[in-house]
Length: 115
Length: 110
Image (cartoon, rainbow over all chains, first blue to last red; front, top):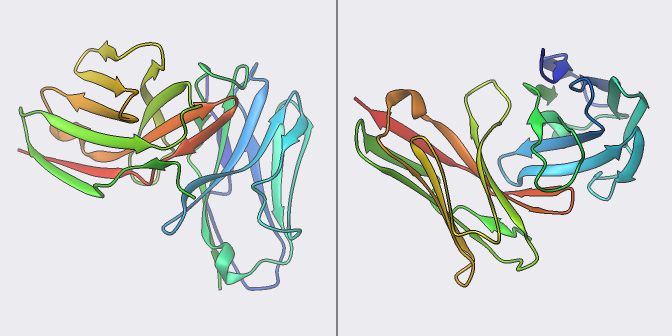
């Protein structure tokens, strides 16, 4: 299996621009997670999907952030408009079931820089 | 509020010796604990886990110990190898959510 695939790997954009991050989970996994990693806050959960349905989006920082999962093999995280404080590494992870003792498998991440 | 804490940001160990990485948590509802390993420019990869009903789990050179009364877990790597140099994240699971510590950067020197 190819593992979790994320694109792009690096994104540099200017403040105010729209940014779209993409994720392809492992085939057969029912749960998908978006995380953000910053120096200050570490790894924090942004949103959790189960069977393509958003279950918990309480970690999404504000309305500028939105996430979709139109089908079992694709998800997007969109930031509009982007701000310098959104600069971070964004990880997508998937798991078979979504609850313990399930293991989450992470993609390589997208490093976002907002100038 | 950080519910999982890794108080040592970095650790340096000689090759062949034991590496001990520590983790503390505050939420007694956590029922499953995991360690992830992360190399630069890669995503975290699962290493080892332990259920709250156990106090030890071993997998090759890696052993995780859980002390529920102290709300403390540790990861032991014996013997340490240069390829173990990475950032190690402790995570605690309650339901679907994984709560991560900020990581400990381990350097294993030859």
